[in-house]
Image (cartoon, rainbow, N blue to C red; front, side, top):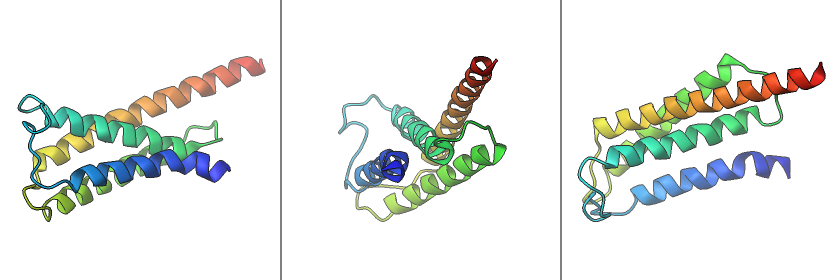
Length: 130
């Protein structure tokens, strides 16, 4: 059960990201978003992805490790790159370097948020031990 609880939310999120990328001929106007806000969507998607991935890596572990941060950012960037590459093969979709930059910014922000939350939990545990 722990493995499912640890990785299922991330798996569902990745499937959702790639499912949305599979929709052909989608433009920001089709989704009723103002022009340029697609970068906010990319940022948000990948910030959530980073939080879920960091959560999966650190599940049950109350010690902070820099390797988790780097693994989260590297894996998230790789997924963002694969998603942009994948979109380039979908009719009516294109691959955008600026979308990829928004993905990386979201991954970085989500990772930093997850780390701060993790550090807060570590401090709380240490205070409870005293």
